[in-house]
Length: 139
Ligand code: RTP
Ligand code: MG
View (cartoon, rainbow, N blue to C red):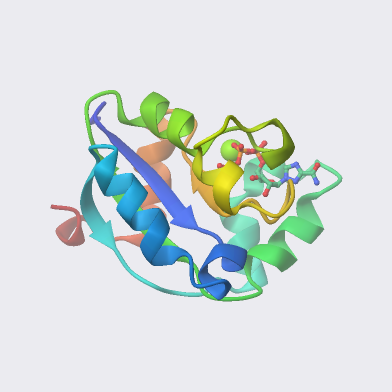
């Protein structure tokens, strides 16, 4: 399992607001290499599958509805210490708690519409990347 890759997606609010380019620029300037990238849209069912780990949480239904409400930009990224460094770059889940200069501080609207996802472990990075990209697309 690669320890130097993570998975992200720019969420519907940020894509809708036209912030994809600015966010991708921040990601590249922070030293991440884009391994794979596309623009796509989840159905509520596929969003539910992606977030199955949160099935029992009170926000699960709203989250699935929100994540399927518009286009998203999923990406696989590469860098030393990718998972941890990327979570630092995006900031806290709730933008009210996010550090200055983080992607969520700059672009997120709320705890739900929080602009961007970042994998929380190497194992989940691999699972989530392969949810969106075939192995021959990951180079
Ligand atoms: P993500 O998975 O999207 O990178 O976010 P995260 O690790 O920072 O947060 P997580 O606990 O995994 O939650 C996943 C997403 O669910 C939404 N959420 N809403 N209303 C709420 O209390 C609530 N809590 C979480 C957010 O969109 C969060 O990113
Ligand atoms: Mg998470």
